[in-house]
Length: 136
Image (cartoon, rainbow, N blue to C red):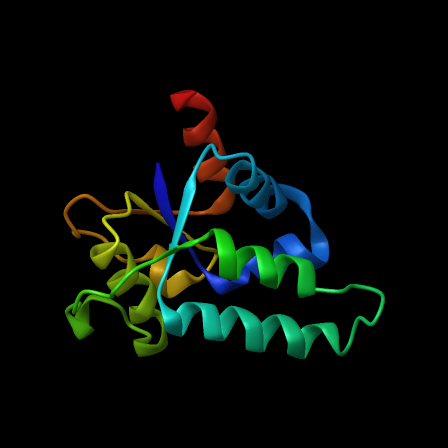
């Protein structure tokens, strides 16, 4: 199962654990594949490092190295800009389209409002974990 994971989910996993951490655990264990574009990887790195500056006891470097080496780098497909209210979120839709991902996992209200993209479902982290458990 291939997914695109929004930056807010990765940040929550690294700094707070919980359900977002279960998603990264599923990826680390090979139960899912995470597709990313260069733009998404760059955003992951910038946001994780910026937040890590406020939480010096948490080192994001191991996760960043893993993300850089174990994700599937895809060429984004052009998405319809009007499909999402926030143009900054379009990169996740384009990566899902280009990487033939089945899901986008996000807590972002703009992405969660996206519907009608054939073959792609946008889910909150808990709903995705429920779906993952049902498929195994």
